[in-house]
Amino acid sequence: MKRLGLAFLVTVITAVTLGTPAGAAQLPRPAGLRIEPGLAGRAVTMNGKACNLISTDVATPFGVATGPCGGVRPGAPLRTAAGGCTFNFLYIDLARDPLSGQDIYAGTAGHCIIGSTGPRERTTFADPRVFVTINGTLTHIGDFAYARLDNQFDFALVRLNAAGRAAGNPQMCHFGGPTGLRNGSIGTGEVLQHYGNGVGIGAAVPARSHVALFGNQYEFTTASFAAIGDSGSGMTDAQGRAAGVLVSVLNVAYGSAIVNSTRVDISLAQAQAVIGRNLVVMTAAPL
Image (tube, rainbow, N blue to C red; front, side):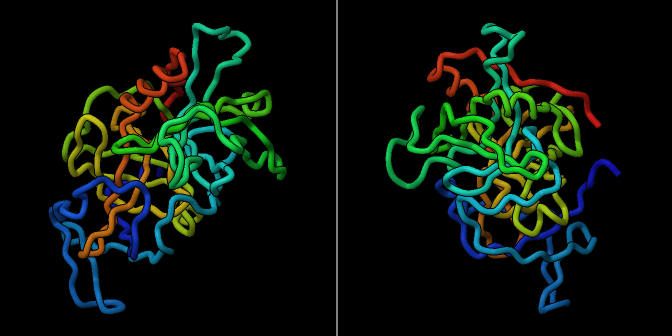
Protein backbone atom coordinates (compact mmCIF):
# COMPACT_ATOMS: atom_id res chain seq x y z
CA MET A 1 0.00 0.00 0.00
CA LYS A 2 1.72 3.14 -1.18
CA ARG A 3 -0.36 5.75 0.59
CA LEU A 4 -1.42 5.83 4.20
CA GLY A 5 -4.77 7.44 3.49
CA LEU A 6 -6.23 9.49 6.33
CA ALA A 7 -5.16 7.44 9.32
CA PHE A 8 -4.62 10.14 11.93
CA LEU A 9 -1.98 8.83 14.33
CA VAL A 10 -2.04 11.36 17.15
CA THR A 11 1.14 12.59 18.78
CA VAL A 12 1.25 13.81 22.35
CA ILE A 13 3.56 16.83 22.33
CA THR A 14 4.51 18.65 25.54
CA ALA A 15 6.41 21.64 24.14
CA VAL A 16 7.04 23.31 20.83
CA THR A 17 10.21 25.14 19.80
CA LEU A 18 10.32 24.70 16.01
CA GLY A 19 9.64 28.24 14.83
CA THR A 20 5.96 28.26 15.77
CA PRO A 21 4.24 31.27 14.16
CA ALA A 22 2.59 33.90 16.32
CA GLY A 23 -1.03 33.14 17.15
CA ALA A 24 -0.72 29.45 16.35
CA ALA A 25 -2.26 28.45 19.68
CA GLN A 26 -5.66 29.55 18.34
CA LEU A 27 -5.76 26.86 15.63
CA PRO A 28 -9.21 25.34 15.13
CA ARG A 29 -9.89 21.76 16.15
CA PRO A 30 -10.00 19.48 13.08
CA ALA A 31 -13.57 18.53 12.24
CA GLY A 32 -14.55 15.10 13.53
CA LEU A 33 -11.87 14.89 16.24
CA ARG A 34 -13.13 13.60 19.61
CA ILE A 35 -11.29 12.73 22.83
CA GLU A 36 -13.23 10.40 25.14
CA PRO A 37 -12.51 8.27 28.23
CA GLY A 38 -10.84 5.05 27.18
CA LEU A 39 -7.47 3.36 26.88
CA ALA A 40 -4.86 4.97 29.16
CA GLY A 41 -7.46 7.51 30.24
CA ARG A 42 -8.39 8.71 26.78
CA ALA A 43 -9.50 7.46 23.39
CA VAL A 44 -9.07 9.57 20.28
CA THR A 45 -11.24 9.22 17.22
CA MET A 46 -11.37 10.95 13.86
CA ASN A 47 -14.76 10.75 12.15
CA GLY A 48 -15.63 7.84 14.39
CA LYS A 49 -12.50 5.80 13.68
CA ALA A 50 -9.97 5.06 16.41
CA CYS A 51 -6.53 6.66 16.23
CA ASN A 52 -3.32 5.33 17.73
CA LEU A 53 -1.62 7.39 20.42
CA ILE A 54 2.16 7.74 20.05
CA SER A 55 4.07 9.46 22.84
CA THR A 56 7.17 11.41 21.78
CA ASP A 57 9.92 13.41 23.40
CA VAL A 58 9.62 17.17 23.67
CA ALA A 59 9.73 18.80 20.25
CA THR A 60 13.09 20.51 19.68
CA PRO A 61 14.81 22.22 16.72
CA PHE A 62 16.74 19.06 15.89
CA GLY A 63 17.01 15.41 16.77
CA VAL A 64 18.30 12.01 15.74
CA ALA A 65 17.32 11.01 12.21
CA THR A 66 16.75 7.26 12.08
CA GLY A 67 14.51 6.50 9.09
CA PRO A 68 15.16 3.60 6.70
CA CYS A 69 15.35 5.66 3.48
CA GLY A 70 18.94 6.73 2.88
CA GLY A 71 21.13 8.60 0.43
CA VAL A 72 20.55 12.19 -0.66
CA ARG A 73 16.90 12.37 -1.63
CA PRO A 74 13.55 13.71 -0.43
CA GLY A 75 12.84 11.99 2.88
CA ALA A 76 16.41 10.89 3.66
CA PRO A 77 18.02 11.78 7.03
CA LEU A 78 20.95 14.15 7.37
CA ARG A 79 23.33 15.28 10.11
CA THR A 80 24.57 18.81 10.72
CA ALA A 81 26.47 20.60 13.47
CA ALA A 82 23.05 21.29 15.02
CA GLY A 83 21.68 17.74 14.94
CA GLY A 84 19.56 15.55 12.70
CA CYS A 85 16.97 16.62 10.14
CA THR A 86 15.45 15.42 6.86
CA PHE A 87 15.95 16.48 3.24
CA ASN A 88 12.98 17.90 1.33
CA PHE A 89 13.75 18.17 -2.41
CA LEU A 90 16.68 18.44 -4.81
CA TYR A 91 17.16 21.60 -6.87
CA ILE A 92 19.36 22.27 -9.92
CA ASP A 93 20.47 25.39 -11.73
CA LEU A 94 20.17 24.30 -15.37
CA ALA A 95 21.74 27.55 -16.57
CA ARG A 96 25.04 26.71 -14.85
CA ASP A 97 26.68 23.70 -16.45
CA PRO A 98 23.85 21.13 -16.30
CA LEU A 99 26.03 18.37 -17.80
CA SER A 100 28.51 18.33 -14.92
CA GLY A 101 25.80 18.91 -12.32
CA GLN A 102 28.02 21.25 -10.34
CA ASP A 103 25.06 23.22 -9.05
CA ILE A 104 22.74 20.72 -7.41
CA TYR A 105 21.30 21.59 -4.02
CA ALA A 106 19.32 19.67 -1.41
CA GLY A 107 16.80 21.45 0.79
CA THR A 108 16.07 21.21 4.49
CA ALA A 109 14.86 23.55 7.26
CA GLY A 110 16.71 26.71 8.26
CA HIS A 111 16.75 25.78 11.94
CA CYS A 112 18.80 22.70 11.07
CA ILE A 113 21.83 25.03 10.88
CA ILE A 114 20.79 28.43 12.33
CA GLY A 115 20.62 28.64 16.12
CA SER A 116 18.97 31.18 18.39
CA THR A 117 21.63 33.86 17.88
CA GLY A 118 23.30 35.56 14.93
CA PRO A 119 21.95 36.64 11.54
CA ARG A 120 18.56 35.12 10.67
CA GLU A 121 19.48 34.83 6.98
CA ARG A 122 22.99 33.88 5.96
CA THR A 123 25.25 32.24 3.39
CA THR A 124 28.27 31.58 5.61
CA PHE A 125 28.41 29.28 8.63
CA ALA A 126 30.91 28.28 11.32
CA ASP A 127 30.53 24.63 10.32
CA PRO A 128 28.54 24.29 7.08
CA ARG A 129 29.15 20.56 6.58
CA VAL A 130 26.29 18.11 6.06
CA PHE A 131 26.66 14.35 6.45
CA VAL A 132 24.64 11.28 5.51
CA THR A 133 25.35 7.59 5.98
CA ILE A 134 26.35 5.92 2.70
CA ASN A 135 27.11 2.19 2.73
CA GLY A 136 27.49 2.30 6.48
CA THR A 137 29.89 5.25 6.51
CA LEU A 138 29.06 8.77 7.66
CA THR A 139 29.94 10.82 4.56
CA HIS A 140 30.35 14.55 3.96
CA ILE A 141 27.97 15.24 1.05
CA GLY A 142 27.95 19.02 0.85
CA ASP A 143 27.87 22.35 2.67
CA PHE A 144 25.13 24.78 3.55
CA ALA A 145 24.98 27.56 0.97
CA TYR A 146 21.95 29.40 2.33
CA ALA A 147 19.63 29.39 5.34
CA ARG A 148 16.91 31.60 6.72
CA LEU A 149 15.03 31.39 9.99
CA ASP A 150 12.74 34.30 10.76
CA ASN A 151 9.04 35.10 10.68
CA GLN A 152 7.41 32.64 8.25
CA PHE A 153 10.69 31.54 6.61
CA ASP A 154 12.46 28.36 7.75
CA PHE A 155 14.41 27.03 4.78
CA ALA A 156 17.97 26.07 3.83
CA LEU A 157 19.93 24.84 0.84
CA VAL A 158 22.90 22.46 0.86
CA ARG A 159 25.23 22.61 -2.17
CA LEU A 160 26.17 19.03 -2.96
CA ASN A 161 29.76 17.98 -3.50
CA ALA A 162 30.85 15.06 -5.71
CA ALA A 163 29.88 12.48 -3.07
CA GLY A 164 26.50 14.13 -2.60
CA ARG A 165 25.77 14.26 -6.31
CA ALA A 166 26.74 10.59 -6.68
CA ALA A 167 24.31 9.67 -3.89
CA GLY A 168 21.61 12.03 -5.16
CA ASN A 169 18.16 10.83 -6.17
CA PRO A 170 15.30 13.31 -6.73
CA GLN A 171 12.57 10.72 -6.06
CA MET A 172 10.77 11.06 -2.74
CA CYS A 173 10.94 7.99 -0.52
CA HIS A 174 7.76 5.83 -0.59
CA PHE A 175 5.49 8.28 -2.44
CA GLY A 176 7.68 9.15 -5.42
CA GLY A 177 7.67 12.52 -7.14
CA PRO A 178 7.98 15.44 -6.95
CA THR A 179 6.31 15.99 -10.30
CA GLY A 180 7.02 19.72 -10.25
CA LEU A 181 6.69 22.80 -8.06
CA ARG A 182 3.40 23.78 -6.43
CA ASN A 183 2.74 27.51 -6.81
CA GLY A 184 0.13 29.19 -4.68
CA SER A 185 -1.39 28.66 -1.26
CA ILE A 186 -2.66 25.36 0.13
CA GLY A 187 -6.43 25.11 0.58
CA THR A 188 -8.34 23.73 3.53
CA GLY A 189 -9.03 20.01 3.13
CA GLU A 190 -6.22 19.28 0.67
CA VAL A 191 -4.43 15.98 1.26
CA LEU A 192 -0.65 16.12 1.36
CA GLN A 193 2.05 13.58 2.15
CA HIS A 194 5.56 13.55 3.54
CA TYR A 195 8.30 11.09 4.46
CA GLY A 196 10.30 11.94 7.56
CA ASN A 197 12.70 10.71 10.19
CA GLY A 198 11.10 11.70 13.48
CA VAL A 199 12.48 9.84 16.48
CA GLY A 200 10.30 6.77 17.07
CA ILE A 201 7.75 7.76 14.45
CA GLY A 202 10.32 7.72 11.64
CA ALA A 203 11.27 4.13 12.35
CA ALA A 204 7.66 2.92 12.65
CA VAL A 205 5.67 5.09 10.23
CA PRO A 206 8.00 7.30 8.15
CA ALA A 207 5.42 7.83 5.35
CA ARG A 208 2.48 9.94 6.52
CA SER A 209 -0.57 11.69 5.10
CA HIS A 210 -1.79 15.13 6.19
CA VAL A 211 -4.99 17.14 5.74
CA ALA A 212 -4.59 20.91 5.37
CA LEU A 213 -6.38 23.10 7.91
CA PHE A 214 -5.50 26.46 6.36
CA GLY A 215 -2.71 28.29 4.57
CA ASN A 216 -1.50 31.74 3.57
CA GLN A 217 1.10 33.25 1.26
CA TYR A 218 3.99 31.88 3.33
CA GLU A 219 2.95 28.68 5.10
CA PHE A 220 0.24 26.13 5.78
CA THR A 221 -0.94 24.01 8.68
CA THR A 222 -2.00 20.36 8.59
CA ALA A 223 -3.52 17.78 10.92
CA SER A 224 -1.19 14.81 11.28
CA PHE A 225 1.79 14.00 13.49
CA ALA A 226 5.54 14.60 13.60
CA ALA A 227 8.54 14.45 15.94
CA ILE A 228 12.12 15.65 16.30
CA GLY A 229 14.11 14.66 13.23
CA ASP A 230 11.22 15.33 10.82
CA SER A 231 12.30 18.96 10.39
CA GLY A 232 13.07 19.88 6.79
CA SER A 233 11.15 17.02 5.18
CA GLY A 234 9.17 17.82 2.04
CA MET A 235 5.41 17.91 1.62
CA THR A 236 3.87 17.02 -1.75
CA ASP A 237 0.29 17.70 -2.81
CA ALA A 238 -2.22 15.33 -4.43
CA GLN A 239 -0.57 15.89 -7.83
CA GLY A 240 2.84 15.04 -6.41
CA ARG A 241 4.15 18.61 -6.60
CA ALA A 242 6.68 20.00 -4.12
CA ALA A 243 4.50 22.08 -1.82
CA GLY A 244 6.02 22.55 1.62
CA VAL A 245 8.80 22.01 4.13
CA LEU A 246 7.82 20.61 7.53
CA VAL A 247 9.23 22.89 10.23
CA SER A 248 7.21 22.71 13.46
CA VAL A 249 4.66 20.90 15.59
CA LEU A 250 2.09 23.02 17.41
CA ASN A 251 1.01 22.12 20.94
CA VAL A 252 -2.78 22.05 21.30
CA ALA A 253 -4.83 21.14 24.32
CA TYR A 254 -6.99 18.47 22.74
CA GLY A 255 -4.07 16.17 21.87
CA SER A 256 -3.97 16.24 18.08
CA ALA A 257 -0.63 17.06 16.50
CA ILE A 258 -0.87 20.13 14.29
CA VAL A 259 2.04 20.42 11.86
CA ASN A 260 3.28 23.66 10.32
CA SER A 261 5.10 23.85 6.97
CA THR A 262 6.63 26.68 4.98
CA ARG A 263 5.79 26.91 1.28
CA VAL A 264 8.51 25.74 -1.11
CA ASP A 265 7.77 28.22 -3.90
CA ILE A 266 8.10 31.34 -1.72
CA SER A 267 11.11 30.02 0.22
CA LEU A 268 12.95 28.94 -2.94
CA ALA A 269 12.34 32.30 -4.62
CA GLN A 270 13.79 34.12 -1.61
CA ALA A 271 16.85 31.83 -1.53
CA GLN A 272 17.51 32.28 -5.24
CA ALA A 273 17.46 36.05 -4.92
CA VAL A 274 20.15 35.87 -2.24
CA ILE A 275 22.52 33.29 -3.75
CA GLY A 276 22.06 34.38 -7.36
CA ARG A 277 20.93 31.06 -8.79
CA ASN A 278 17.99 30.06 -10.99
CA LEU A 279 16.98 26.81 -9.32
CA VAL A 280 14.27 24.38 -10.38
CA VAL A 281 12.89 21.38 -8.53
CA MET A 282 14.34 18.12 -9.82
CA THR A 283 11.40 15.89 -10.71
CA ALA A 284 10.75 12.16 -10.53
CA ALA A 285 7.93 9.73 -11.29
CA PRO A 286 5.28 9.03 -8.62
CA LEU A 287 5.37 5.57 -7.05
